Amino acid sequence: MAKAGPRRAGGSYRAREQRRPPTWEISDSDTEGAASAEADSEAATRARDPAEERRATAEALQLLRPEQALRRLTVRVDPAILEDAGADILMEALGSLGCEYHIEPQRPSRSLRWSRVKPEPCLNNVSAELLAAGEQELLLLLLLEPEEFLQGVFQLTQICGPTCSVPWISPESPTCPHLAVIGLDAYLWSRQPNAQEMRQPESPGMAHAKVVVGWPEVEEALVLLQLWANLDVLLVASWQELSQHVCAFTKALAQRPFKRFQESKAFSFCTARRWVAGERVTRDGIGLRGAWWRQIRQFNRVSPAVADAVVAAFPSPRLLQQAYLACGTEQERMALLADLPVKVDGGGRLRRVGPDLSRRICLFLTSTNPDLLLDLSS
Image (cartoon, rainbow, N blue to C red):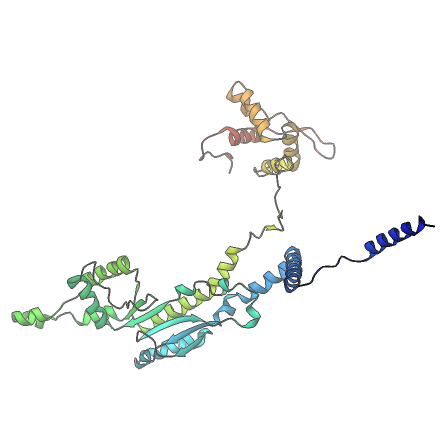
């Protein structure tokens, strides 16, 4: 009995030790660690679930569609633009486009600015970088009168050099504006002197005071603006043409997030690390025979039975290349595969690979001419 007591006590202790879960000191850090581990496990499970991934991808694609992204774009128009009689054409085009537009004072004056509306809560599952793709590249379009633009052209081409400050660019502004000039060609034609003015003599003072800027100076200024300040200038003939440009640019901005999303995803034919089409070859050679068979089938007028005959005789392209090297003459290499028997279902007459396909495969594996035509009948 004296020995049984300790055994029972020991057995009971071991039983209690097996039944009782281990006790730990619970702290806030332990709770946070368990919660984060559980969250990581759930995230890994969701990442491994192909159906969940496909559903999330479909939702993201739907949210990033150009027609949806267009609704999250806002065009801000300076009130000074509305003073022009042709501005109604621009406002009608923006109204029919489907995006928001607001009339707000802008700096600089007579400018249009594109910005993106903050995404709604339902868009939080999509990457913010994709929704705001190119946020820093959104355009500020500055409208200039022809006379104002020509004054800047004269300053660039006649007065300043490469070290001067470029007109229309403010150092305080983080956005580099693009310029648009309406009716410059008609304005230059209207300033050309007529025959009567050319016959009248001018005093030296008047000739010096009149500044003449033509198309040669304008073209020179366009090159200087592009080289010095990476500044583009849009020359349009009417407000209708300007409205078309503004609408086209707005649509391009709406398409940018969708294109960025497509470029960030894997190829459509490769899902879950498995090839949807084609034959995958591992490092130990598994799948090489199938890939070689598919390559033979890519030649014109090659049936599966003919491809089976070539692959059965030479299971890999390397073995066929070695056989070509063992041949003594070019004619022997060309006819190496010609007499290979081809199994035909139905018990018909015996077929062979033939000299034409034998020649094409030989040239494909041995020729070094990239412009060589393999199939003479094509």
